[in-house]
Image 1: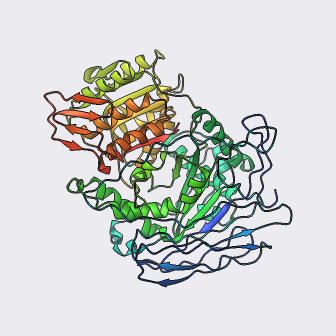
Image 2: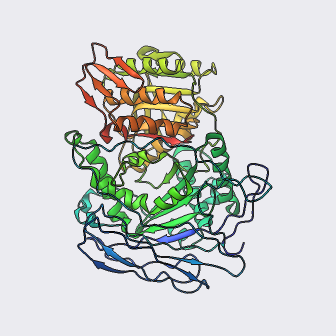
Image 3: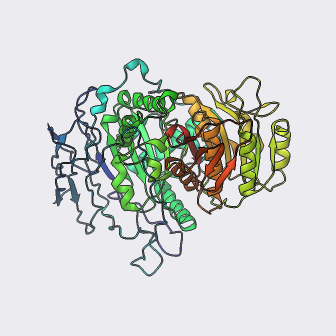
Length: 625
């Protein structure tokens, strides 16, 4: 293909889908900080070089008006991009500086106006003792009518048509990095793998075809389709080596069009618009790639988020959220805001313009234990804007949609342990779940592998809920397990459960924990849905106290009856906790569904569950639908 245009593929509804235009690429230049200085921009995606950025330091307050966006039209693809004048401000919550863009047209096709790129504004963060208010529930994005007569165009309503010239529009955003000066010392950095030998590939698997030895080699190509194809292959190889699974990667030229067609099909069934985001952590930068259901793929590089800066912030965020003495504070905010600026803010305008509501996050080792729901833009949490799921790769994700509302649940759990902390709220949790959706529950001595297999074999349940300790540990997959009554169900044994026939649409582990920063533990957690055969899995990154878990699970299953997707159901439950609509008051569990009396053996003081410790741990894995 010429100029980044992929030949058209058949659309999901009678008609032809327009050709996929070339990607949008850009570099988010670094600002002065304690680490490394300024990294020179890399060459642009198509001809020409992005000129260095001129910067000056100013002391203007955060309320200063933003300068207008300068745009220019260039008639050749080889002319260097115009330099961007930016200012650096010493606060992490200042609005983003204006973006300078150049729109380039070719002689083979008239240029169509590209999406406008307004500066990203980050409002000051909340102060201690205040809670962010929940955002209104997301509503389906209706499809606009096509200008053709052969079928429907699934472009979002009121969104400008994308530039189909196949030429990349390089966009530069300023991300403030003043927080870098407060980063922990190097000994606190996580053990994040760098350049490692490639895992052994099964020559009989198509996974081997997609394997690329180094992501650095991929990004040298400046070919988004090749990069995505390589990243999918790398991720599949990584999970295959650990879990012993196989997954096919579509041919390189069909990969992005195939993924986009799948996203459009899901949107028609659910009314929810989704996008795939890849986060690739390189030594000197964080790479972000967005695959939307329509239009061009979008690529940003964030040199500020190099590994030396990124992973200490990841660790600090989790430490600040989980430290018991800090649960009444907002000490996590600087770290949550910095990660938002690095990982989400560069894509923010694109997500808004495209009407994307659900994110599928495929991320690198070290990032799979990030509580993404708690990332903060200065006004609110990520989960108040988007629902999301964590995926190993899109090609390894089950995309067969079937609504799970009003689905019977097989609920099992254990409250008594010899060598672990008891879970006294589990009986009430199972009873509440059974009351919301129906189905039997099995507690303690009846919670055995034989009972699990025999009940599932009846073919009545599409949701399996296990309320017990589960741990994702370093080392091989057999080190990670789910604790039953008289045995441990180990991760490497879960494939034998055959939960793909009939299909288990959702596996819930309500009391699991994942070793922070450990590659194998993250692989176990991130690959849980794939290994078990379930379309999706819901688990916790760290152990949440019994009352908080009871509150979230009760709210989750109540919201699940409303016919929403699994990711939106979790989003609604987490939003209710942020808004203090879920808590303990006068020995009652308070939820939006009503109050539930706590038994005499559970003594809980009055508390709300608005702090991220209680809700951001719970993460959906696999299909968000």
